[in-house]
Length: 92
Length: 167
Image (cartoon, chains in turn brown, red):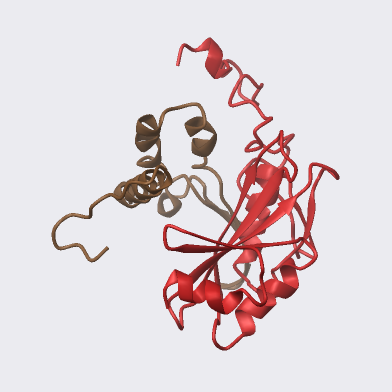
């Protein structure tokens, strides 16, 4: 039996669809369909300043905004040759 | 192993090496790419066993136009390297051999590179779009593609291009 799970399924909260092939209660194959949350952030930042880009990348993954923000800030500051200083207690 | 040490070890195999900001970048030709990556993966002193990312950049006025970058990580030895391949503007779509036989993570990453930049990876088991809708026309992260101003499947949802929005 083929079951369509998501993207409106509560556990996939709107961003993931899986097409499951079931044999009884066992999942035989799973075809994930993603991209529902992809809004062209990379393309948008091509038209913005570095500072405006921070606002975009924090929203790239709403469950871990600061990781994206940190990665973006470290990479962009490294590209113009300065070095961000990690906060106290950080091992980075 | 620091970046200079790693670059020193690789220089006999890869003559075109850049070291910047503590990162090592190796530039290879499309023909040497697969053999070079296999060497990096299987040499016991290097053991780059994990392809952590695969990205593309587009330079429409230049030749090579596309740069495909493989970001490798050695979980055994803790070092990283970036391998870059330049692809000319013609033929379009550009073609490269798939590295899915070496790195399973390349499956989705190559689909993404195909989806956004139109790079065709020969030998990929299932090269179709991964993020954009299946019926999308074009490869949106190419610099020649517009940010907006294209028609969508939704009525009344037209977004004007950025130069008409006063950004």
